[in-house]
Length: 402
Length: 190
Image 1 (tube, rainbow over the protein chains, first blue to last red):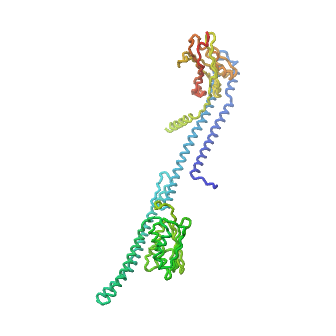
Image 2 (cartoon, chains in turn blue, red):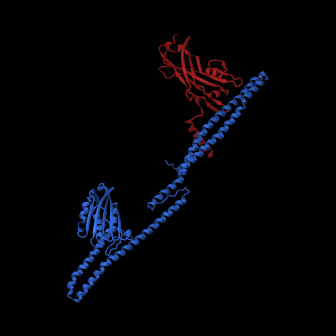
Image 3 (cartoon, each protein chain N blue to C red):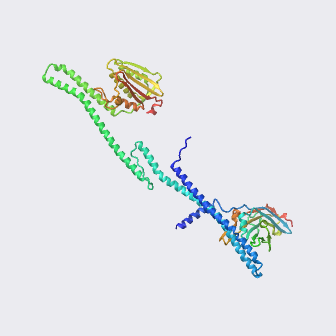
C-alpha cells in the first residue's frame, strides 16, 4: 500500500494540536510541579511540631494563672497553621482540576479557531482550484469570489482578470473564425455558381444571335441549348441542396432495421456501373440508426468509389461485427487519394473533382459523428481507397437512444 | 472590562467543569443497623453509621476545628407522614493540637470522652448507642409505628481559608438514613 502525505489542512491541525498539548504539558510540569515542590519544602519545616515543642518547653515555667491563656494562644496559632496547610492542599488540588478545565477550554477554542483560520486560508485555494477546473472545461464565465481576509486576494484578482481577458480573446477568435468561414463560403459559392452561369450565358447569347440572324439552324440548336441550360440549372439546384444539407443537418431519427438487406437494396442501382462485391456478416442482425442518413452515407461513398474508378470499376462492401461494434468497409480499385490530401478529405469545400462541392464527405463525417461512430480512410495512389465506418451496436431501445 | 469578562469566563468554565468533576472525593455513608428496644418503660435506639469518613475529613479533624455529626431520630405512626416524635442528638469530635488527644462529646453527656487514637474517636462519633428516645406510654397499643434515623453534618468555617466548608460534600451531599420495619406498640410489653 502506498502511503500518501497528509493534506496541508491535516498537517496544520496536527501542528496546532502538538503545540497546544506541549504547552499544556509544560504548564503542568513547570507550574504545578513547582508548586508541589514548594509545598513539600514548606511542610518539611514542620512549623506545628516546632510550636508544639516550644509550648512543651515553656509550659512548666509559666504561671498557672496565665497557663490557660498561653495554651489557648498557642493552640490558636497551631490551628491557624493546620488550616493554612489544609487550605494550601485544597487550593492546589482545585488549581490542578480547574487548570485542566481551563486548558481543555483553551485547547477546544484554539482548535476551533485554528480550523476556522485554516479554512479561511484554504477556502480561496479550493475556489481557485474549482475555477481552474471549470476553466479547463471551457467555462470562461467563471469568477472566483475574493475573500475579505485571505492573503490570496491578489492572486484571485489576477485570476479573474486572466479569465476575463481569455473570454474577450475567445470571442475575438470566434468572430475571426466566423468571418473566415463566411469568406470561404462566399468564395466557394461564387466559384460554384459561376461555373454553370458561364455555359448558360453563352448558350442564351448563341440562341439570341441565331434568332437575330433568323437562320434555319435556330431550330437545330434550340433543343440543345435548352438541354444545356436545364442541366446547368439542375447543377445549381443540386449545389444549393448540398449547401443546405451541410448547413442544417437534421436531427437523426433512429429506427431499428436489418443492415445487410438494407445494403443489398442500396447497391441495386449501381450494379450496372461497377462490379459490386458484397461480403456481409450474417451475424449482424438489426441495427439502430437513422435509415435515411445512413443511406445518404453509403450512397455518397459508393458514388465516390465509382467516380474514382476511370473504367472497370470494382467495389467491395463488407460488414463485420466486432466487439459490440458494426464495421462497414467500402473499398474501390480507383486511382486513390494522395497522402497529402488524406487529412483534408473530410473538410468542407475540399474537393479534387471539377464539379464537386466538397461537401459530400463532410456531410458523411457529420452523420457518422451524430451516430457516435467513427469513419476512417486508407488509400494508396493507383491501388484504391477503403472507407471504414464503425457504428456502435445499440442494444438499447430506440426510444432510449433517441 | 476585560478583567470582569475574563473572570466571568473562568468562573463559567469552572462551574461547567465542576458539573462533571470535583476536587472533593466523597464517600457513601450509610447506617448498618437501627435497633429499637424497650427497657423499663423507655424505648431506646441503637444505630451505627458506616463508611462515613474520608481522608479529607481526617485532615479536617486534625485542624483542631470541632466537627459535629447530627443524628435525627424520628418515630412515625405508620399512617402518617409527619413524625409524631423526634429527637436530635450529636457527636462532636475535637482534636487537641497540643496534647494530641481526640475528644468526643455526646449531646446526651456532660463530659467528653478522651480517645488516644483517631480510630477510636471515629468509632464513637459514628455510633448512637442506647439512646433513650421516648417513653413507652406515648405509644398506643395496637397502633403501628416505625423509627427513622438520619445523619448530617454542619458547615464549618475555617478562618484561615476564609471560607465555609460544607462537610456534606464529603458524603456526596446525601444524608444517610435508615428506617425500621413497621411494628406494633404491643411488642414493647409494659
